[in-house]
Length: 229
Length: 303
Image (cartoon, rainbow over all chains, first blue to last red):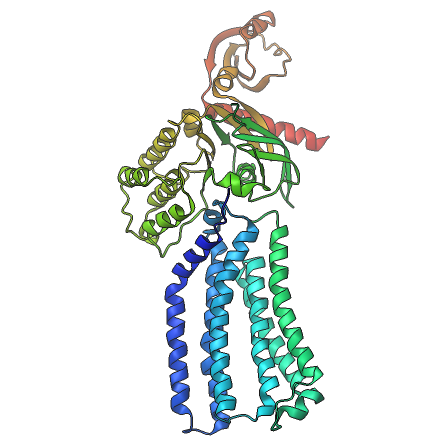
């Protein structure tokens, strides 16, 4: 009987990353606090821009720092031979890395999305018609993250991961500018009602599919690797 | 019950753009020690990584303790302790962190033995890895590999860069690990003295090929240096096992492999006087074997 050591690997990485996770959680809480303080004291148009930086910044940075430290530096700092000398396959190693990175980023992402949605729509910064577009914006960030996470696992290279971050940023911006000008989206963004028309549903479904298939493809490719050191 | 061999590599081949491991056969029984000797880039680390399932061979098969690698690597690695020269521990963490981590994975972890090794190696488990010297890091890694009581130890250049005192400690602990009769060691080293001291089997690797693999006694006994006087500058007998000839005036030194008692009689018959027959150290054997392999490789290339 050979029980999987994935739980031990996950615990190990959480322990190694605990200080970073706590630090970014505090930064995120502070950002939310600043946002609350600013609300009502500055114009909404300015607040929205500040909010984007304050809320998404710590979450995205935490996600990137975590995947760099757990995936890329494992190879760069030569701790990978130590881990791979243990009873673990490449697939299990990858699963463990996903189980550390995905939940942490997802938690930050959900918290940030929740706060953003609450302020945007609960306090009336944006009209309700912008809900589908806002959903696409936050899902776009998640898809970009899964692409960067996947790249960091597949290549374990600082240069390639940084390149993937740059590509993701540019692609996400280009993608958002494209969909906001799509007539079925644009025509409802400023409207009083939330409209989930077929285009909006298709875009959201494609985003979810892209995120899931990126993760599954990563596992599949890693499973086929015969050389891992 | 017959135990499967500790290592059984048959015809393993691995191709890289600038290097090729060619048709390597390696085998030894459990309870034995095999030392791999070869210059940098010979293929030692590639073989050890295949043994660990970290690289898959392009051709051939690798079995470790009866497990096929890399397919059955999870089961195999439960019984293998691996140390590589380029292996590092987590710098921001303590030795105790690493001990707890390994202990959480291996039921076989021996707390008593781990504490003994901590004392023997003069390590403080509360110390962070980044504060350790190179020698202390190697000892900490050795502790982590040994205290889980594996049946097979695979060490890639374990003594490289160590001062003589730490090298001695590491070698002594490797020897202590062999008190269990079924425990085996496969290790690579540049240091022929280390290999000569603890190996039962010695394998020379050069240019991705095994150029010689035998048990230590046969290895050492098989090589001799003959000091000859060649008064009339007569040609040497044409023998395939002459690996090196050095001439200095009328004196001639011939290094031979697969030495036999009848061998010295061939020289007087050819008009040469045998002045002395000397055994070689492993280092001398290694240097001659590599030189001979280089010459053969050049000839193959020329053809």
